[in-house]
Image (cartoon, rainbow, N blue to C red; front, side):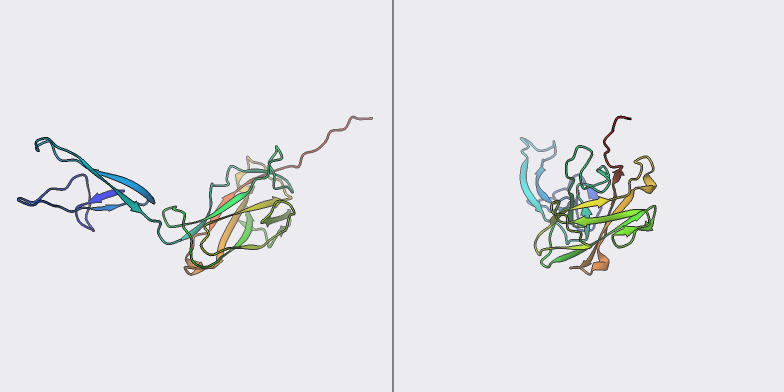
Length: 212
């Protein structure tokens, strides 16, 4: 965020009143949407200085990307399951954001397609030579989906992910990278930034049996 004496000028920390003037102007710019309290305080040269405050509301910009939010890089799943090692389902939340990370929505439906890559190689439409992966809108029943549609005027949707091939958490380059691409919506789909992040898939739990 920054204050400016002129619309296109450099950031400033103060503005001056011209001689004999009762008013002055400044400009405020902020990349974070919200309601912000702006306080102006007179310099020490004025007798009995008093501050004044006002609230400025900053609105989100136009939607520019789909993102995993919160980032899913820290999520660990068990092979062929959408659950972690404690058996807790792990939803992956997609949100629509402006260029600065503020959540917003569009007035038209947005279609998001999914893909997975491993070590930079496309894993294919739901399968690869080392395993099978899929996304689903629901955790139960599991219903594989190659894409989902976010309704108009909504900004978030959760999906689930399964992968049959376990990869070591230490071998980051071998972890599956989940990608969500906007293929229909506004602005033009090619202008959107895709959601890209990795998850860790661990081997399935096993039951030990005594030797006989």
